[in-house]
Length: 476
Image (cartoon, rainbow, N blue to C red; front, side, top):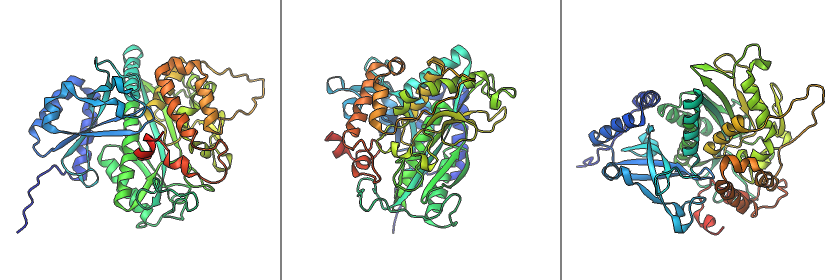
């Protein structure tokens, strides 16, 4: 006779969506203290939770997860520490102790068939020993800056990313990449073109179901232009939650693909000769419940403050390019033959422009930053966008002068040089974080040739910052 000895929390998808939507609603209304009281009480009461997963991201954007025993977590909330020297881009060994502070507004109840039963997930802020915010935790810095904008100006920043990726055959296909064989695509179809039960469509369906259950509020899910490429769009959110969604989106896709014997990759250009993957980032500001990027009488329906953001982003385009495209492989995507948004200009129709102005109304008016790769650190990206928009210098627009064509850097070496020489970057990120980011981008760049050529190199894949290969990282 068999006995089921385990009784861990497993919640149906419809109930999960209901719980996560309610948690999102509470996060918008309640204080951190009230949310802590609520979820501490729930964790004490819910006997079927075996572990609480805390997430944070390093300076390059890799997601790190720690599972805490529920009882230990509740007993140790004031003293959750970890070794920062073990995280690339964090602290040196002599100042290794860092703290984690739970962000109670970030709770997600997770699908047990993907993440395992009996777990609940929170994001955490990284703190110094003295409980001050850690300079290289850009989730914490984004959250602090967004809260300051809300307090001082009554402004809320919103974002909605369009994250593209590829599904390729085999588990751990990135770690075992060979430049001769390349990646094996699982579909030869294109835009919207996939049979209902083929492997790509089944992957999209399963991933989208999990995202809906986690309150992403998906809007449309479909194959993309290139074979084996996908995109799942979810609704606008406040910038910190939007960045959390990006990290969870990629985690869900990777996990679902793995359970199907495949790999979901967010390399910007994993296969030559077809379209690469981007993360077009839609952005707007709200105040008093109104979208202040909208002006029916403004050019393309945008307000002066929206255009101010546009001209500042264009003016600082080369300096921030490394933030938007932070890997060697990302510069393969900036290829004009495949709808590449590599031109430093704005347009309502030209998809080669760095910034596009989509058709919008009082609710949907926004700017779309198209030259973002899907492997960018989402917290650093949105923090930089906000800082540029509010603190950058505006690009002068001369109506009587024909603008010359300007392009983003076409290789990571040039992007690093622009980033490194920028005083503005030092001012907005801080010299310490700037130097750390340069260090790790340079280490990866030095392992690949400057001239990318026509073949994806093994070095740009296996040394990529998002690909789990600790042995190689330790050899840097």
